Image (cartoon, rainbow, N blue to C red; front, top):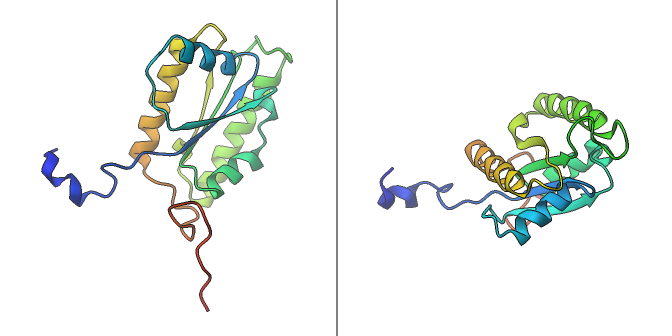
Length: 159
């Protein structure tokens, strides 16, 4: 695309706001390793450390979307390696159900992603964040709650 036409595209300089729910045992440690190893990845993800990926409730995802986040990443231990035995299996089922529910509401399912990153996979974590960011950029800004202003505050009610 020609650079001088970018001013006509409002999404040209738009960067998505992402929230990542990371398992404290594996994915959070992988994110820490990516940072200490100075791996390059987009810095537009806010991280929330959870005890296990199964702790991420569907309401957490809805709340993040309602607050104006454009994409959500839920990341935990590899299947079969969960510190709580079957936590990541429950998380995988919950995320699949939540995606179907959000699709019913009109939210693109590409906004919610799941990944399995171990503590020794800092490079993989950086790759996952990069891919999630690219995917959400293709989908565009979160318009589910369009009455919110750009800074995240509620717009004034009419009438």
